Length: 163
Image 1 (cartoon, rainbow, N blue to C red):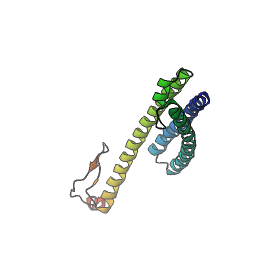
Image 2 (cartoon, helix red, strand yellow; image 1 turned 180 degrees about the horizontal axis):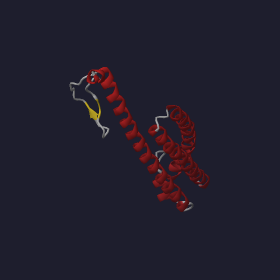
Image 3 (tube, rainbow, N blue to C red; image 1 turned 45 degrees about the horizontal axis):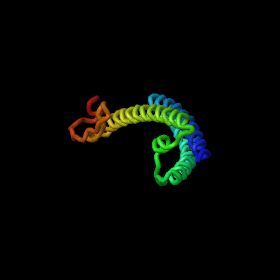
Image 4 (cartoon, helix red, strand yellow; image 1 turned 90 degrees about the horizontal axis):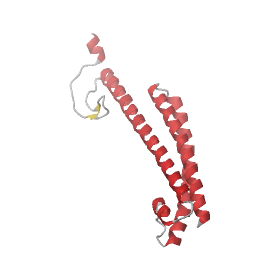
């Protein structure tokens, strides 16, 4: 069981590093969204895919070790990291520290993803607004706050207004 605990601790630290890379990419993604740099955004998304594959591989190893520990402890293979920490004596602090650090970076990535999501919604709102102005298609779209606008309104074409 000691070997599995060491592997889990190492996995958590590796996951933390990879999620830190994701956070950097999310910051870069935010800049690309603001600048409407679609090519840079595509490169970032491809880099994220590669990191996510690595995360998946590492997490699979962590899950296998967790299941083995869970079975040894009589809890079963669906054991959580918190349960492992509560049921071991050795390396308890190391695992807890790694888990706390991983949670902190995950919260940062989550905040960045929400910001990026809102920025994309605003961009979609602008696109919808311009499309409606040029094509005389009013109605469903996005408001400035990112919420959907489902009301049908009458408007005139941009060219009609200019004439």
